[in-house]
Amino acid sequence: MLISKGKNHGLHMFVVPIRDPKTLKPYPGVIVGDLGEKIGINGVDNGFVMFNKYYLPRENQLDKLGGVDENGDYETPFKDPKKRFGASLGILSGGRVHITTISTNYLQKAIVIAIRYSAIRKQFGPENSIEEIPVLEYQQQQIRLLPYLAATYAMRIFCNWFSASHVTMSINSVDDDGPARGIELHALSSCIKPLFGWTARDGIQNCREACGGHGYLKAAAIGELRNDNDANCTYEGENSLLLQQTSNWLLGIWPKRYETGIADTPYGSIDFLKNVDQLLNEKCVANMPEELTNHITLIKTYKWLTAYILKMTYEKVTRLKAEGKDNFQAKNDSQSYNAVSLAIIYAENFVLNHFYQTAIKFEDAACRGVLLDLVSLYGAWMLERHLSSLYMGGYMSGEMGWWLREGVLKLCARITPQAIALVDTLAPPDWCLNSVLGTADGQVYKNIQEHVMTYPGAMSRPTWWRDVVFWQTYVPSKL
Ligand SMILES: Cc1cc2nc3c(=O)[nH]c(=O)nc-3n(C[C@H](O)[C@H](O)[C@H](O)COP(=O)(O)OP(=O)(O)OC[C@H]3O[C@@H](n4cnc5c(N)ncnc54)[C@H](O)[C@@H]3O)c2cc1C
Image (cartoon, rainbow, N blue to C red; front, side, top):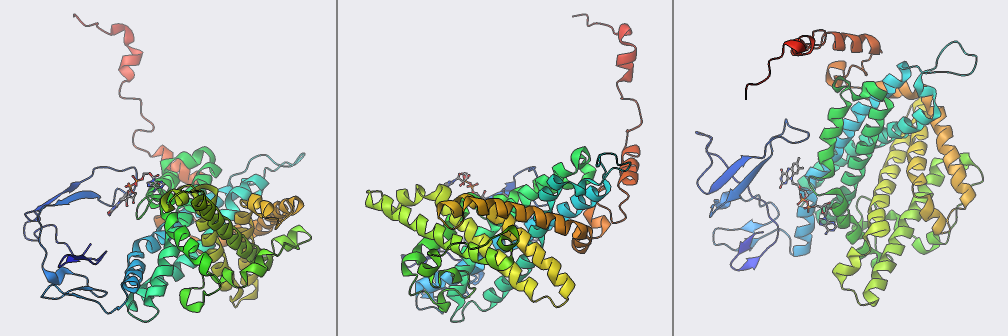
């Protein structure tokens, strides 16, 4: 907080020198140390730091959006403190925006390894068949991997745009629409960081299990990805808690939904509120699985679902307040099933729309077709988890729920023949993937054999072999 002449001007940023560059010792007034080994990302040193009457020169303010002059008077390019706050929220979202990329990178590596391995690993086969079939041919293997392949494409495309948008917003933060962009970007990063962190968490675990026992080898490299991604669910805001930033913003918008315009949503994330009363009266009209997994139907269904959950959450908070609960308690008692789902569904809706808008513009028709299948799979697979809400809200019948599931399975089967080409597009070079299961040449068994046979000590007797073989010569203690 920046406090000047007795007034608190809120959150501000400073550059804080920790160590003297000539000696690397901490400056007087600074206590700093290392936190020790963590369960992942040990290439990053995390530490603790304490300050005791530690003074910084005024020049250390990062004061583009506001700071004090030499007399201690506060100056800012914004007349309205709320707007300054909005712009700084957007800039401070940088960590979360870039974590979406980190989660995507981990999942991207894991999905390449698991799909390449699943195309090589053969187990059993149809009756009377001599040849066994690759495990990727099995429906259950497909549904554990292909939705995450679709998710990786959606996430990769999204986070490239998201990072660039954050940089542009930061550079132009003092422009007229800077504060609105900052606020919306904050709301988006507060739910998309959790969405991507959790998608990567579940996807990487599925990839690990999809590779069976070999997936548990350290040399498969999936375990490390899992541990490293874990931190993404906690730092820069614990995922579950962070979602409140988004849901609170949306709950504030709902009563103003008829006045909300383009200026309030420079990124278009609340476009689902246009004609919302009419939207909420609509019902799904699909007649078969293919219609339900059509991207246009999916986009519309998500729009309805986002509006519906927002309305239900707002009504719950309002009801609890009417029953006498204060704002804190009413919001707290509306998290599970309501506000948390709201923030996640809002994130999914936005990412799905972005994926669709990118895929539909792809010039090459054949590639566009495959990308649109991925859009459908991503959307239908996510939506399947919200079937209960779609049913409870009267948007879909129970039968439609089964069609949606059938549609997901059909999409998985349709995308499977393209799966290797799709992961080859995502794959980093072998040295970077660094997995015995995922090399581009498909030589899984050769790699595993080489790794196991050359592992230090793999072929030698244990160092304590004498204790086992000559146990009868063991001399008991004289004590
Ligand atoms: C690898 C790593 C690196 C980090 N690097 C940095 C760094 O560089 N700089 C830095 O400042 N910090 C850093 N952190 C700290 C990190 O930002 C915090 O750990 C994180 O924001 C969560 O806060 P907390 O640990 O205080 O969790 P807590 O707030 O103690 O949360 C514990 C649990 O309580 C729940 N909870 C808390 N409040 C509520 C509520 N109101 N409603 C419902 N549930 C609630 C949370 O959801 C969580 O499940 C790092 C953490 C990690 C793991």
